[in-house]
Image (cartoon, rainbow, N blue to C red; front, side, top):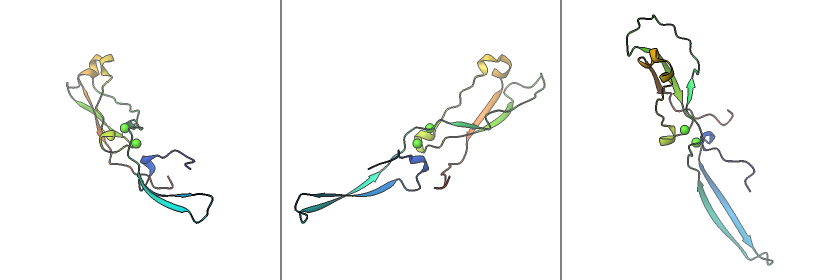
Length: 115
Ligand SMILES: [Ca+2]
Ligand SMILES: [Ca+2]
């Protein structure tokens, strides 16, 4: 019986080998089944900025399309669940709307069992 949820993103090996036994009242009437259970990734982690806050000072005459800062972004999921798109909130700040703030993914992080 499972006593805790399975978290694919913290598993070192996503495959479990299970053995199931069945018997009736005659203890010699026993059978065994084997199950290979493979857990697949769910998109259960959001992309996270690192750092998530940065103070930037620029001259007022900064050129349009100047890269102000490159944020690193990590998502603990894998494959397509790790993909993200860059969304800018700069529509509220017309000056910054013309400047680029880039985000790029960090290398995949697979935490150790004792993380
Ligand atoms: Ca994700
Ligand atoms: Ca996941």
